[in-house]
Length: 221
Image (cartoon, rainbow, N blue to C red; front, top):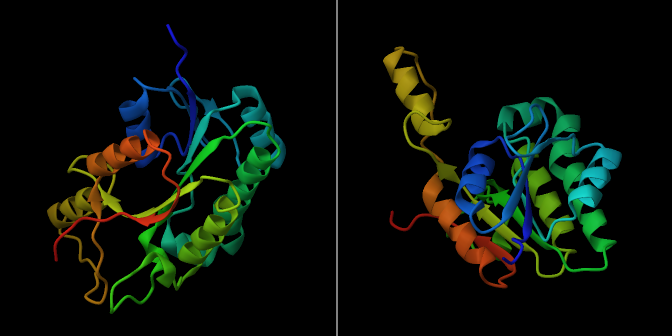
């Protein structure tokens, strides 16, 4: 039987990383990476350490990398610029630098964020990014690095999960159950995808040679 291509997934214990492993495992030899725990059939690694990053990349030598790992806590990024820079920019830089030194083409898919659009009154085209905080700025910076890899794919998106899974729906429901006062917002619009929709789109993207920067969102108002 033909050998399955090797797919490295960073952020392998995160909500999206875990879902991608589940979705793609039948087509790829999935190797999830995580920083704070060892994923099933994966490796615990600190991608902000260039030696550790290079070591695991050399060992696995993947055909495809889906880079989901990031410091996504917006407030946390504001409070700790160094951590935001190290995980969102430096870790990406090390992956990109490694790819550029290889003799074979390696597909890089980068999961970015719709937060790179701080002000979109007239709608957001891919050219209209304007980061407004540390989180979105570091993700946008990382996009710039990913662009150095031929054929790389950058997906700017936002997603939600079902009740009982980590995410905004679970947080809202539990907060209401516990009678917690919530401070929300009225001046932000976004069109998140359901997690399963996002993993399906990524699967379809991998079956093509599509590259570039794309906004992914739900349709409708």
